[in-house]
Image 1 (cartoon, rainbow, N blue to C red):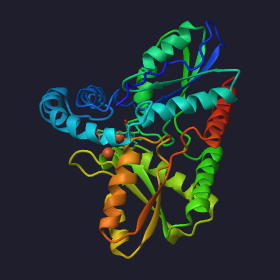
Image 2 (cartoon, rainbow, N blue to C red):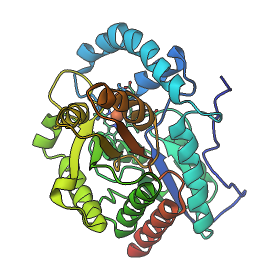
Image 3 (cartoon, protein in one colour):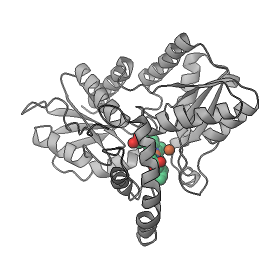
Length: 333
Ligand SMILES: C=CC1=C(C)c2cc3[nH]c(cc4nc(cc5[nH]c(cc1n2)c(C)c5CCC(=O)O)C(CCC(=O)O)=C4C)c(C)c3C=C
Ligand SMILES: [Fe+2]
Ligand SMILES: [Fe+2]
């Protein structure tokens, strides 16, 4: 196993720089595929009240004495299955994406940060401010808004003083992003042929949050409608499902694993799966979908689950985000 990479918070760092900056923010990931590192990461992640809303005195002992000791070693083994030469996929691809966006926005300073772990979001904002940025556009790498993700980034961004911070709430129906996702499906079909169905799989959230007004499910549906439209799909060609359930309460349905199982049992042999809620590949796409769910699909009679990678640092992705950032900055000028 190679040593973990801690990319600098600022990707190209002149001593003084432009007055405007763009900060791409992703979820965060462990520093190493070890139980200790995963435990540190999950402890921070699962202590965020935006993610788990239980009262502290109830949740703290459960988290530290039950969940982390059981979960960290098990999840560390899963990370080890997808770990790259330069680190965790989420960290590697986020850093590469920020570099690709920087090349398209030479007039701005572009950096990246993580909500949990390193490079830390608040420290990244302070570093940009101290290097001369007066205004920072924070772009959470979540196409669809959720209180569990986007709002949590905004919470931390609001704690940094002395800089004008603007947070992009979502880009679920951005035409450039929709076209980039649709193009990636076309490219996959050109190489691998077309599966019998295209499954759009999004990270789930508790149904309770949607009932309380979280727009995530509606935005996921709108994203899928726009991508399916760009691809000219008929309603019977595609499905939408939600993955990565955590805990016992009901999450958004239908669940991805059960959907794949039902498809296999209905005689579907080849299914294409894409995860448009994830900007870059990570544990949840590379391990849960491309490995675990692919095995499940085959075990129930399917021939192949063909996973379509996230946009990662593809030129179309960097171009779409750069255009979106330029527009967001211009709109408030
Ligand atoms: C505890 C509840 C969780 C909610 C709510 C949740 C929402 C949510 N998450 C993402 C994106 C990612 N999640 C990732 C991993 C991950 N997610 C949870 C829990 C919740 N997520 C856990 C416990 C984990 C860690 C792995 C595990 O223990 O199972 C990742 C991948 C991180 C990586 O290192 O690769 C991403 C990305 C979204 C978009 C979202 C709500 C919309
Ligand atoms: Fe998650
Ligand atoms: Fe998972």
